[in-house]
Image (cartoon, rainbow, N blue to C red; front, side, top):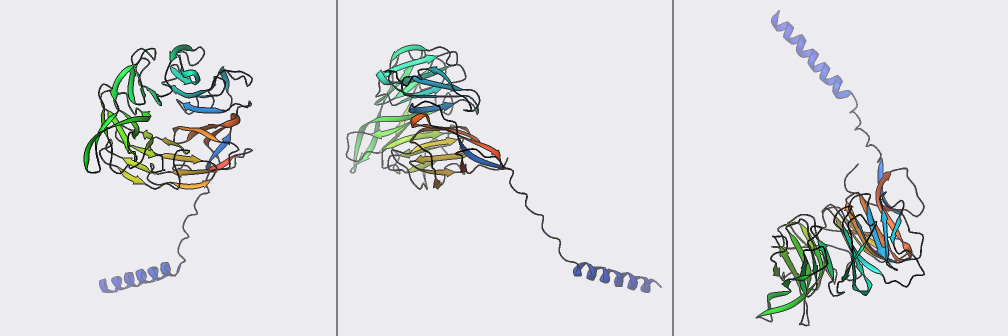
Length: 361
């Protein structure tokens, strides 16, 4: 009787397995259509003023500067702009070409006639600090009092920009034609990923073939070390560091090199174009862009490689910035302003340009 029961159970199992095998395989679940997309959308200023620089301290609040001593401010992600200085197209005032804000209250602008101005109330009022030489090609502040400029020397202020003193001369030891040389140099860009760690990027001078020079401080600008990495056999242009050790440097011929150890070693990145007229921006090591003419290149892997697209903006792009990987802003001639943001897939706006985004939403 026991053997018979086992036989019956076995027959049942075989029949059940055959039934399952005969059933059609379940269809894989359908991928949900995307709900979001990234776009560049016009947010232009309605006056014929060339805008030279832009900075945002958050996704929504930022400043743009340009011709006729103009400072524009937005608190709603460039949907609306308020004039804080200038804005008169008939004015004879000189242009502003650089803006740097430390937070929502404290910021600096500089430009024509070597004028440097500071605000401590978000731009409601501005203080004239005197002259800052046009040969100081980069400016950065780490506190309301302490800041740095970079040119043929690195200079430091400890009173908010009223007075400056030399912090380091630009000179680097390197090998030229097999011989040890101490080369002079000058810097074009400067960035501080933290209050303690900062970098300046530039080039050697006094030789027919300049090399990139990278200076680093680990103590808030008290001391600087300088190097001329062998892989950078061209003039350094810009530096972007999104942590104390992670960043990239670009050169005038369009080469891009990445470091993950504070500049001890460098790896080449693949870019479809670049060079002196290119405008770069990086968002925390996640999203990067290079804009040159009517082309734009994007990186979604921290700058290791870029892919290009057409970029049909109506005027020259003069500056671009990304406060984070989902918000970006560019400014250009004739009041041109575009904002990069994430919108529902059904969203449509006049003049918008499609763009990639990092991850999903």
